[in-house]
Length: 218
Image 1: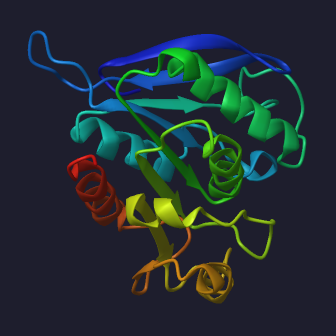
Image 2 (image 1 turned 135 degrees about the vertical axis):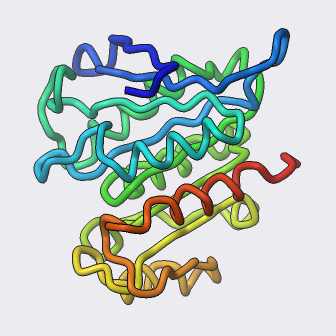
């Protein structure tokens, strides 16, 4: 667990959702840049909020002054419910976002991030929220295109979006990610020789994410 982390149980659509909040170190009177909610990989293949890529993204956000929220989808860890092929997981994600950054009282910035299956779910959260919420940063890593129907991203969010994919990803081939991104003219940052789980390259991942979310918020 991050040294400045709180564990919470939130009420989700299918029951309790196990949640961790990782907090940045702030000066007296200073507020976090905003809230970053990070979604984990596939629940049926060992994906949890403690996945090392998810934790690395959380550390990047914390490094940049954000409060980072990780949670387990329904049926994972202490979260209640059962796997729902992305449909229920989307509602889980939306519930977590609304808990930490209610639409009616949104204060500070909002960032969404996801890894693999989590990137797929996050893309649909963006689609659901874009018309009613300001999304200040979006990070999609190892996006599970080809395996799931990843939603297209609104064009006005492209400049606020970082899409990262490993050249040597053997879980989600780079070609599938490019096939998803190409019709949108959405840039993809390709990490040469890197696999799906970023073995040996987590510091690089953390640095790229931190640099993206440290940019001045427009």
